[in-house]
Image 1 (cartoon, rainbow, N blue to C red):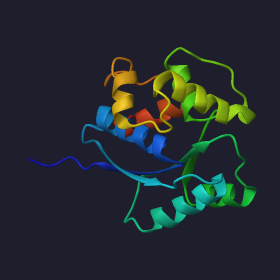
Image 2: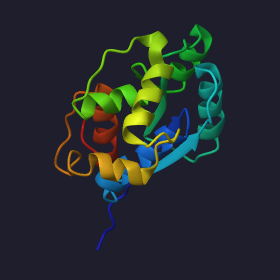
Image 3: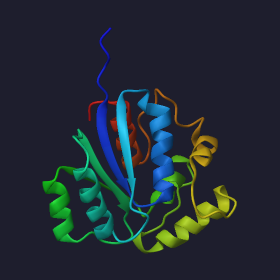
Length: 172
């Protein structure tokens, strides 16, 4: 029996919450179709996250999809944006942050602008994480287990929809 080759995917994330969410997506949707490598930049500016992504990905053999994912509350410099694009990265920006995207999926969409990311995070933490500051994979399963089904690939969030389609090996 010939073993199906898994599509290699590299995702560099801004922090712990994004990493936990990617692990949830991987567990729910990958089903052995993709090999997802996650690099956590542990915060910082988009430029620092871009630098981490490029350095970390260069150590891998090959990847079909290269993704860098961060909040939209700070700007990525033109130099790093050009470098990421040159190196074949898809740049994903959560609006205004991951927690804002999650509010959207839960149908609790609140209007937060780019300058209100900290408030959005605090509101999400207070409402869904019992005040904890970091989303964990178990939280994802509790919050989204009935929403994220293995056969559902479209969500109000373009960022989340894209990540799920990559993990599921669906043509984009």
